[in-house]
Image 1 (cartoon, helix red, strand yellow):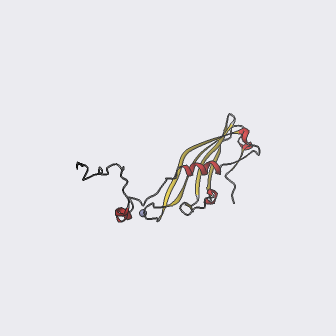
Image 2 (cartoon, protein in one colour):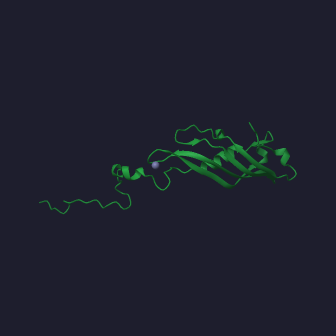
Image 3 (cartoon, helix red, strand yellow):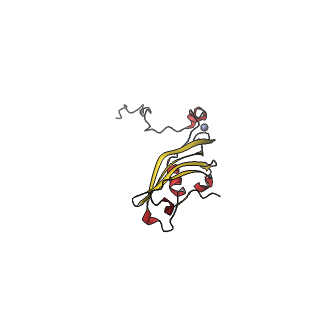
Amino acid sequence: MSDAFILYIDRLKGGTVQKLGMILSPEFFDIHETDLLFQDPVEVSGEAYLAEEELVIHLNASTIARMPCSVCNQMLPLPLAIKNFYHAEPLSSFKSGLFDLREPLREALLIELPKTAECPGGCKERAAIAPFLKKHPEAPGAPEPYFPFSDLKYP
Ligand SMILES: [Zn+2]
C-alpha cells in the first residue's frame, strides 16, 4: 500500500512546495454503515508547504458515496467533491515529523455529505406513498382546522 498520504515535514523545509497526487482506497473512511457506503477510490490532488509555523495542505478531492434514497431506499451514487480545501496544522503539534493527511481529508469529505438523498429528479415512488404520509397539521399550506359545530350556542 502506498503511503503517499504521509507528509514528511523535513522535506518541506526551505520553502519546498510538494505536489500531491494520489488515489486512496475508500477504506480510510473507516465507515461501516448500511446506509452510507464508500466503494470508490478517492482521487486527491493538491499541494503541501510550510507557512510561518504551520503546515498548509491545499487539496482537491473527489469520490462517490452511496446512500439510500429516502423514499424508495434504493442505493444511489452521490458524487462527492471538495475543491480548494485548505487545512493548516501548527508545526508544534508534530512530534514525529510526519503528517497523515487522510484525517483532515476524511472530515472535509464527510462534511459535504447531504443529510438525505433522493432519486435524481425526485423519487418516482413518492407519488405512490403520498396518500400514506401523515400530514402535519402545522405544515405550511395545510388547511385551517375546521370545527363545523363551533357556532352552535348551548343553552
Ligand atoms: Zn427513490
